[in-house]
Length: 74
Image (cartoon, rainbow, N blue to C red; front, side, top):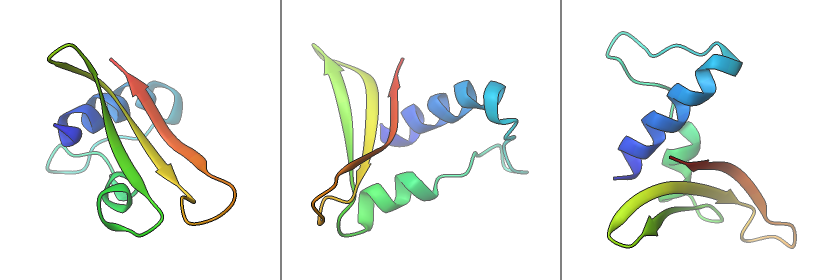
């Protein structure tokens, strides 16, 4: 589910960043990958009832200052 929400997020942001998908139709996802596998990072899905409606990627969870790296609500 996070991968689908990430694609929606990156698509929305592309209007501001100019980022385009690669030849396979995928946007960059280094921050999402870090949120899923790197210590000090985390990725979360927001739900409204049974529906996934957003995501957040956080970093710096192993330091005093936590950073909201990415945030999206569909």
